[in-house]
Image 1: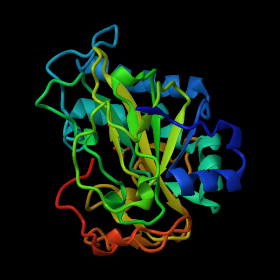
Image 2: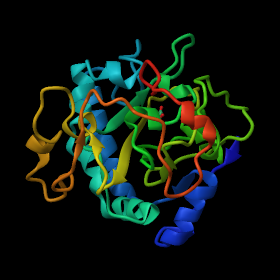
Image 3: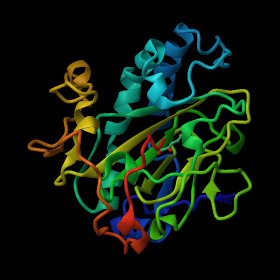
Image 4: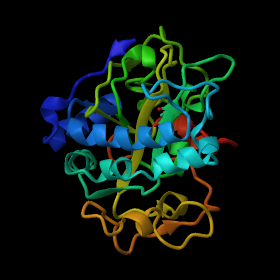
Length: 299
Ligand SMILES: O=C(O)CCC(=O)C(=O)O
């Protein structure tokens, strides 16, 4: 496993950031978000997990694992309370993160109100989280040039199973899902610390490493797109039947809350993603021309 290229020196330089995105398919910045804000998010999430019996007073996971995958975890009230915790939701609106994404896209952007919390138990094969399979996030929304930001909420050294990306894979064809093995060549990851941010393009192949520790791995992933492009309804309004922006009823009065752009056009739920259009950053491999949405969830 290679080390992620560190773009911290370019964090305010849109041209260099976009060049990195175009060549590597990702940008990694250390200590972008104030560690105190990330610790507050961790404290909010773990308070709920502790109350619900998922972890003990030392934050050690209590077996058996609550759930393995994000979608299934959403059916669990303990997890749902953790995901609506205030400081976890606040993270994505923090200025340094928003500014970096705007620089990368070279255009005003916004994060989807739908946020993903990962609580990954030490791996006990054959149970493996879906995030461990190599995938590309385009399948999740069908929005070209969508970016995913992945944030550790705690120290996540490689043995705790952080995220790995395959640099340059955004220039290649769609990939079939398969498990990422720690020794796989041509992949990069790092020992993550609170405040670090990994941002990757929606055609970049990525997967989580196995959690071979005794700790629960806690991280968040948040997706972004340009403000002037239509956005998938489910990422903005959440589960079917809702009419207002997800989480706005709970947080709209918070000083940090920012609604999605006024007049945002929504792609209806039944919308079937097409092969990706041209990218603003690089030539899309022709293998994507025959791409069809996969039948199940990608991560
Ligand atoms: O954190 C994980 O386990 C997987 C994350 C992922 O696949 C993503 O952010 O798209």
